[in-house]
Amino acid sequence: MDKLLDRISEEIKNAFEQAGYDRELGRATESNRPDLCEYQCNGAMAGAKQYKKAPIMIANEVAAKLADSAVFAKAEAVAPGFLNLTLTEAFVGDYIKEMRLEQKFGLEEIRNPREIVIDYGGPNIAKPLHVGHLRPAIIGESVKRIARYIGHHVVGDVHLGDWGQPMGLVINELKVRKPDLVYFDENYTGEYPTEPPFTIAELEEIYPFASKRSKEDEAYKADAMACTFKLQSGVRGYRALWKHIVDVSVTDLKKIYQILGVEFDLWNGESTVHDRIPEMVDYMKKGNYAYMSEGALVVDVKEETDTKEVPPCMILKSDGAYLYNTTDLATIMMRMEQNQPDEIIYVTDKRQDLYFEQVFRCARKTKLVKPETKLVHIGNGTMNGADGKPFKTRDGGVMRLESLIRDINDEMLKKIMENPKYELTEEEAKPTAQIVGMAALKYGDLSNQASKDYIFDIDRFTSSEGNTGPYILYTIVRIKSILAKFAEEGGNCEQVYAHINAPVNQSEKQLMMELAKFNASIEAACEEYAPHKVCAYIYGLADAFNHFYHETKILTEIDTTKKTGWIALLILTRDVLETCIELLGFSAPERM
Ligand code: ARG
Image 1 (tube, helix red, strand yellow):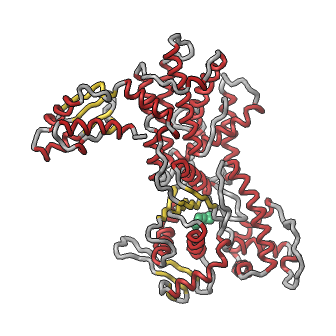
Image 2 (cartoon, protein in one colour; image 1 turned 90 degrees about the vertical axis):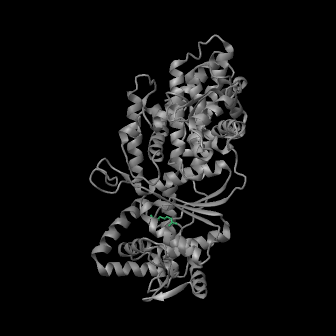
Image 3 (cartoon, protein in one colour; image 1 turned 135 degrees about the vertical axis):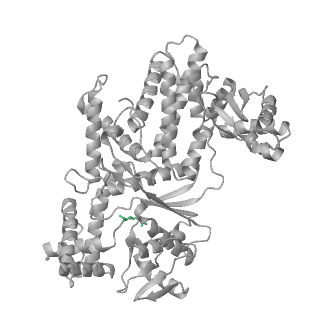
């Protein structure tokens, strides 16, 4: 279905043509003076030079052609040459009626769906999830859902950090603490135990401990590096122990991602491509892409037009060890083979911008990808505390994701219980607080442009007023409760849902015009990898709905045609809002 703006523009284009001007001048935009009109067209100004005529004259001629238009109730030429436009009620009502009957509310599915791999999450094994991993997970999940909704084929991969130095640190520390474990007996040839020799709590304590010690103790660090090397070169016991570390960690990670409503199709990691690296290195050498520089194997990736220094991409360190980008490049190779993607998207902290620039250039130069393969890095900004610095715990430590979620749920519960209209017990309110808390957290994040830093303000995020998740949910719940009353009084939502009428007042018209932006908003959010555009859309929609609701007595209306039309409009608003929050990755409770 055409976007509303396109449909409006079409009418103006015809008028420009009929008046003897280039039809392309007839593009409409939303009005920047909503007090004067709903839409505007600046085409006469643009055409003035070409036709050597005062813009107001052109505008007047075009306005005359629009006098009997079914689209515009008012088309006025105003100095110095704008067209101020107001839509007819019938046109708006018809558009919404059509939108109601269309699949996906008038959003057209993509004609050429793309194969997309999206790499987001990026948690590291043996380290607890901290808030730094929150944004890639939340943003990536939403970008994935939006692309799928539009019709692309999208595979999400968590890309675990499971193969680097942290693994050696953990294994080495286990060796220090439990030297008798069978995994360290190099002569052992039997089966290894199926039960891990540690708990998740132990594991989480070990990593920071070992990491700290390795910074202070050279010999200790060397031992840890030796462990990494043994692991990577395939020593049986080390691999078996590593497998336990991964399993225990992944079980825990899955729990948290589930709470976050984040689902990955693939649980691959850096380790997945380990065995492919020699082949890749070979290929890069044979193609003369890679050369030795101070003992390391590198690929140059700088370009003439660079304004900043882009260092070479290092494939192997001088000791032959692999790096972060070695695994990323090998992963690209594997994905091209297994998924044949048209596009690979990465969501990470924006501090990795330069890193991905290097990796992408290297992948192109070495032809790991096709010339037309799109490589995208969505670099997210930092979530800061009230002091403007990266979010920390009260005592200055790294905030664990679990604690953050707990805090927000507690705050939400408190706010729900403070609401005098809320009738349930605290125990009953808990599941609701979790649903709303998740919306507060995710919306608080997603409503910001991904690349921008933002301040995590728990009080604002959990507020039921303003541009927040809870505000959106309150709006949905309010609609649901009106619909429930309508049903209690004998109404049948199923029967009336398509009975959209022309709007009878300005707030209803406004609500319809907001609804009508659905297809354009979702398309823009997809093209620009911008979930914040979905947030902006539903915020505008929720506001328009609440305005309409305060001005309209819906259930007591005696004119049944009017009333059914309103109920249908409510159902559509609910459906659209619920679809959008699903795209953002959260849901609404039945009541709150
Ligand atoms: N594990 C990495 C980190 O914590 C993020 C991984 C992002 N994905 C990637 N393909 N490099 O920084």
